[in-house]
Length: 120
Image 1 (cartoon, rainbow, N blue to C red):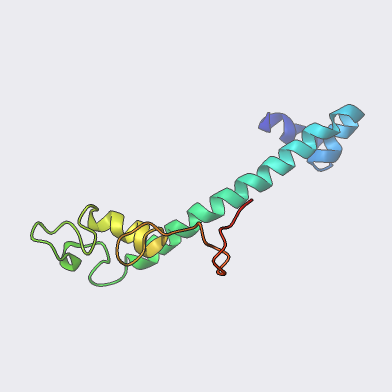
Image 2 (cartoon, one colour):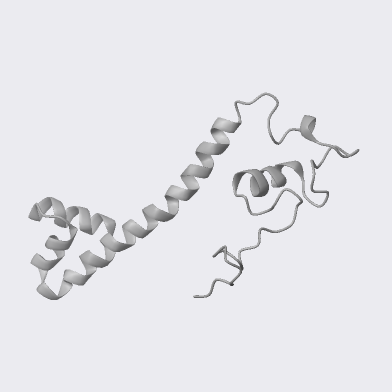
């Protein structure tokens, strides 16, 4: 499909949406659907790329945030959350902020700030 779209764009010298509509007017939706899908994929992968960049820049710290030098238990596996390894704790607690400082899950039921629960 990708090769077909590249070939259509090269031959017709048009973008994705116009190339499909020049093949047949009813095929306009295929070009529109592929463009919409590409935008949605880009939005999703931007988050993953930002995680990778944060991990990359955090790897230059000495000692590493997920290293055994930052552990507090006897086995050298966790920092402040005994049920998670240090690497998991750094990812979920420090990077994604899913867990609070006391290792409890971040509460999203009261996101309005006025005591009322957020509802869709």
